[in-house]
Length: 464
Length: 60
Image 1 (tube, rainbow over the protein chains, first blue to last red):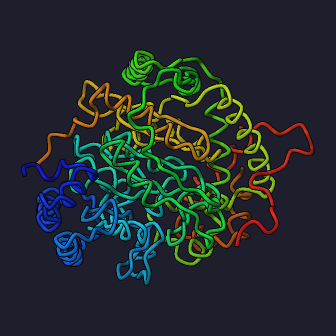
Image 2 (image 1 turned 90 degrees about the horizontal axis):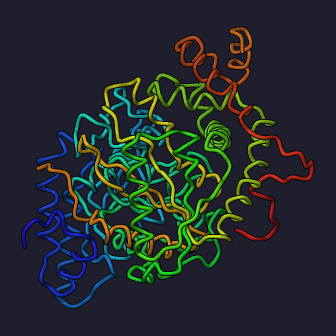
Image 3 (image 1 turned 60 degrees about the vertical axis):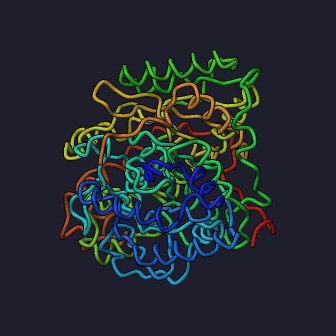
């Protein structure tokens, strides 16, 4: 079998189940690729090769005797380093937690292992999922495999970079203001922020309690649905966990779009934050393609991106300050400059600011819910620009807030970002699909229709 | 927000050490926070509730 590194999770799991592929060969091939490419990409903070090979050998023995743990049996996965993996430090890419050893797996990791996945190691992130890309931390920032001079998005930067580069077929990311969908957009992969509460947050270092989501990052829509099925489910020990939430997310993947109503939120990228023309053209192309697939397309208006962004920032920085305040008081020098600045902002927000944002939040939820009574799925921009050069600090600062992801952290609706095409400069541009609460299956249906029409799952960076 | 206000708020928030070691970062953080809430429309209805709500007996 050639090109093991471009195998999808679904096809690898299938081949392992039919004994055509050895989990040991797959894991070894990916670890070899990590050894070759990661010095350029910095996707990993820690490769756990020995444990991964031991798990692969166990998976092989089980598969040979016909015992499969679950739908991801023998498939390697990367874990963002704010998520606990037993026996490894959860550093949050920060000097502050450099020796923070995890004693148990986070629930999402435990579920992945239960489904048969093999943990390859811990992945780079923006410091505490907020400060990056930064060059003043104990580890370098991850880079974009489409062009390593460019940033891979964040904060789940190693997850996006590694999936796109074929270091692993799937990764876990987290998303508080867009941190799964930003690297998915920059790296041209599929990233889902599920409905709030669908995936347990237990064992994941918090950034903002009411905005944090854990989400799957993969190269294909099918793999994303497969991974979500493995990590979703109620956790009585996570106060935000949704009761009885689990479904068959791949159920509608190959269903026609005929009769499906899609609302195009044009004002996000045309008026609120005017997008790069290549992004605008790509979004129009996606919309036309979905119409050709049978969808009924109409324009939808939501509150402005500017206001969504303000509500997100007030809530995020206030809640994050409640976590980081004591450390910032005692050891501010242990943070990188970007995280220090962003996290200290919460010290200057008032209780009145937080309550204002929280009250407006409910009204915004009502407005998005009203829109989703008229349509089945929303289509909108994710990033307004292709990824800029990682060392161009001014351009990183200019382009970072130019996005339409934070609205759905504020409201908690499921939102998926994926490739909409490639820019003239050879970097991915992106599109976002948003669905009703717990209706990830319809989001995947639309995303799969676009993937099938455009062949985005066949586009890989020319690296390695 | 003027310099004195920033310093006063920073000290009362426990950021005296940060203020001494990273005064520019404290100023940037305060500036970031200063205007953001003004971009949010204030609900007119005094009964407008915050989200998430208090719900007794639904979790844990």
